[in-house]
Length: 473
Image (cartoon, rainbow, N blue to C red; front, side):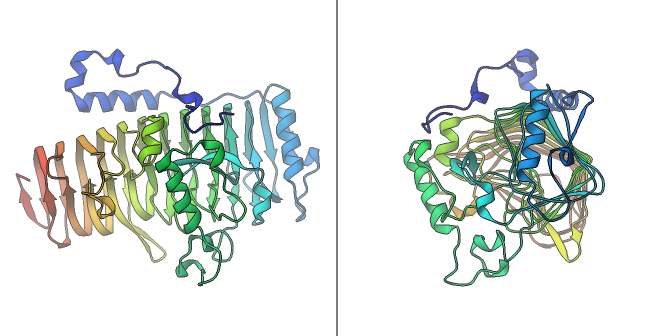
């Protein structure tokens, strides 16, 4: 394992130049590029596994409240040693700590199976290499983790239960709304220290957290893996991000059902990943339903791996901040993204959705977002802006020196029934949002006027907000 923050992960090794093969003529056609990227993602095939099962009950696991961590680890080791297959979780509730996947292993949950993860922080030791809010460090293991493995999966119709609550994990956010009270432990001092490590480029080996630091782990995190499938499972009560792949190639997330309303409970956050397909999923989350990321500030620029060739389709976003967000941790860049045929009703048991599309950065982050298509989207009632593209995220527009860019974004066939604001498009003086296309977009009812400034090369056709046709922005 690399000992320095300056050692690039394996994912940064040279790989096929996806864009180069499109030819010079395609460079003038952003929509064609994004469509080609989406087509590439759609052609991804899931990993294949030998047809043999390793039931965790054959290795000592019992659905009787006793800890099954070691039994599950033995089943995974046996499956891996045999050349791969399914590690089967049969019906029942099995209690466990961390689960580390190995190459060739499909962790498969039967429909009436539940893996219930421990709330004892010691169950997620020793520390592992991870990325926490866009900055690399060593921290508690994610509940399900894989490091530099290939052909891995988490599948089935069963439930992954992180058991997070205002009494466990969520309280560490340090907010009263999640059970915290003054004098109790919380994550803010460690979070500030991590940001300082990123700013100073402290060697990775020295960025150690875990006990006493209170940085919450993600739920499912393949780290620097290839050929990854996450399919069908239900995920509830996550400590932090629910699905957070980092530096992965060839990633499929489909048919996943997520319901977790804690702090920073993003649904699916591909982070510096390449060739990604997210489809037929449903999200009820405490943060962005889907957020595409690529590292934060100097640490993200140091690694410099974009998130690219991403297709999101046929998903339902019930509650969260953004239906689909890009950023704000996108310092390594994001390119060639297509979001299509999604529904964002924005109501889930009293919880709502803030934005349909949100692309966000600032001059601390830097990075470039380019070639994005957002089409055939239906949204209900949104509590903030229907569409937001901003380089002013966090009100840090003039404090940083790494100017971000948003360019080549197409939004078409978008209908929103109600939002507080229709359009929030905000570039920066000398750094406008460039090449923005809006076609057949209708936002039926808004309560506040649009905020639109610092744009360049905007094309609008069939744009209507609050009953008013808009031809120019």
